Amino acid sequence: MTRKKNRELFIQTSAIFLWLIAYHTVSSQQRSIGTVEVYVSSQSGDRLTHHGNIRFSPESSISLPAINVNEEKKFQAVAGFGATFNEAGMICLNALEPKDRDNVFKSLFDSVAGAGFTVMKSPIAACDFASAGPWYSYDDTPGDTLMAHFSIERDKGTNGLITFIKKAAQFGKFQIESPMDFAPDWMYYSLKPGEKHIKPQYYPALARYYLQYLESYRENGVAINYLNLFNEANNEWYSNVTYTEIGVLVKNYVAPALRSSGASVELQFGETANRPEAMQKFPVALDDPQVRKYINSLSVHGYDWNKFSTLVDLHSKYPELPIWQTEVCYALPGNIPPKGPSTLPVYDFDDGEFWGNMIMNDLKSWASAWIYWNMILDESGGPWLVSTEHGDPDNNRQHPVVIINRTTKKIYYTGLYYYLSHFSRFVRPGARRIEAAGGTAQLNFAAFENKDSSIILNIINNGGEVNCRIAWKKMMLARRLAAHSITTLKWNGR
Image: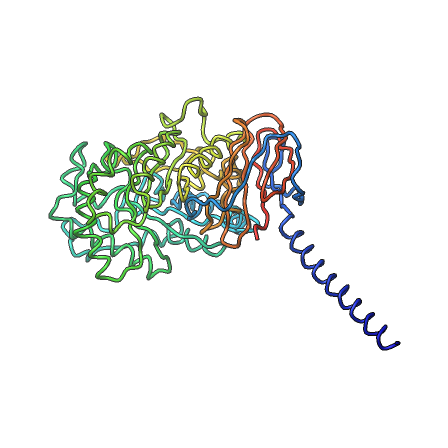
């Protein structure tokens, strides 16, 4: 009898023990899934502020505008977010003490303490913010078709692009896309308006020029991941090269040269001055399958300010090619959206809301990457390079992500920095945009699933303080959104 009771007690105890293990496991899973980290930047003073953790709870009939998140419906993959390396930025950084300079790099590239930028732009030779000297190419020797005089020495200097990139790489990991404003001057018919076309006799030399650039950078410790032949081509200001000509260069010269050399770089196509240009100008080349087979992704600039539906059309026409927004900024005189600022750079945090909505709307329109133009400029919106024959005017004031006053040494993180950081820090390379629906007209939002299964919901509140409800997997949470703010909610989707 005693043995039987002992056996029954043992069975009961074992069952309770197993139940406790199961209960603990389920509870742990629920706790892991249900916990939501909250980060806010707001008009009232929050700056990527961690507002602690909240919890999902079972669905209820609470009457609030709902944002419904559904990771079962997926859209484009995200390559990342970032800005541009230019000599102007390195000049500003070199005005600081080493410790302060390192703090700026950390704030831009560290994925835990900073913005965690993951895709960057680095122009091929001179552009309007190659400010460490006069206009230059990597081979200014007329007729040097074999690139015997090719040199990247300037880029290795104190204010050079290679120096800038290698320093940034100490603080984070990123990929680089590189476009070119101008080939060496001697390759053009002339630099007069309308005559800035590459002479066909120099097509092989130009392919060799691109290849030498990639190899020289690699030999100096910098990998270029994406090559884009021209920046804002087929316009009046930079190279007048048409997209038909670019298609010929791609399929007959550049792609074969890259293939023969074994260069590990992807070809991008575009760098149009605005979104609508892509639909107007790409098809003459991309509808040729012999061109299209070499192209990895398409790139557009944002200087139309709000024609996001063009990207939807572009995706519909070329669904297999990711779309990158690779340049946009304020510039004076003349390159400002309606109701935009009258002076540059802009110190007011509230300006970030404009940029946050642009980022959000590009992503919701199939953009896979978002890159701003100048990452760092000084208190005058410079320094800039003047070369009118290359389309680079004087008094070219622009707005950066970070402002460094070269006189006072004070560092300012703009509203753009904070809104962009809510995407770059939390939505990591390889994430997929997922369905997020509902809300109100005041709220602009998008959701993403990272490769580690974490889910990110970014919500921009374009008005006064408001309450909303987040619904996910038959659970919900209520959240009060600060006036004129961006809120990031992060949770485990497993």
